[in-house]
Length: 134
Image (cartoon, rainbow, N blue to C red; front, side, top):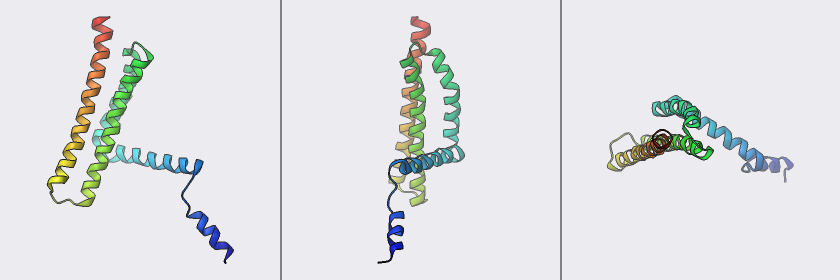
């Protein structure tokens, strides 16, 4: 048995521990970068987050309320990324019209819309509590 063949086999093993975490983090950053570069809606939501974080710290009457306000904005971004991934996958499979492809894209878009409604509810409740109820 060639002693170097074992070394080659060890290199092909899946990453574990810290090496796996480093690779996963690198891939995640690539995904965020891709979303910023290719997705207009994600860029708009990033701006909303940058404005929203200080606003959440000012509007929130407790640490938990501020965290919930920020989390509602982050949730929109998470669902937007999943929607964008679905759309990219559908477009990768085929650019031809298909009912299931259209349904997939529509449902992804609806998921983003529902998370926007959640954020409006959370923000509206916090604003109502701070200024109208006192």
